[in-house]
Amino acid sequence: MAASKYDFAIEQGTSFKISLIYKDANGNAVDLTDWCARLIWKTNTNNTQSFNSENTDYSLYKFTIDGINGKLTLMIPASVTNGFLFNTAKYDLELQSPDDLYNGGGKYTIKLLFGTISIVKRFSQSPTQLECST
Image 1 (spheres, rainbow, N blue to C red):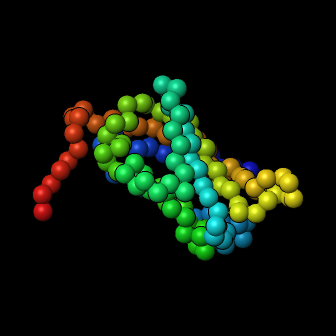
Image 2 (cartoon, helix red, strand yellow; image 1 turned 90 degrees about the vertical axis):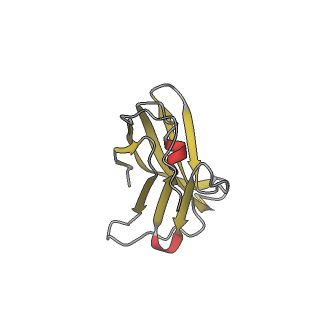
């Protein structure tokens, strides 16, 4: 199956969350147990950034896979999106199976999505994020 094109926006200085469920041609969730995922982008300012589901440092982002339900979720905190100074980025979302394509052929890897990410700039251009006390 060919990758799908999906464009989306990230609002600068806000928490960002995107979730999707990978389904087969019959509409059933694909079991992604033990798979890994990577979203990689290249900005209009020529910077490359990668988000991997095997990341364990959640201070910059959290990328999870709910394997049995075929669900991928990427979350980026407001403290990180506040520093996004680019306007657009081109991205690819890739998945890799724990199984080899064939003996000696490396892991089975697919591109699931690709497209353009637009940054919605803050009007205030505040260098700080909102901090409320409870």
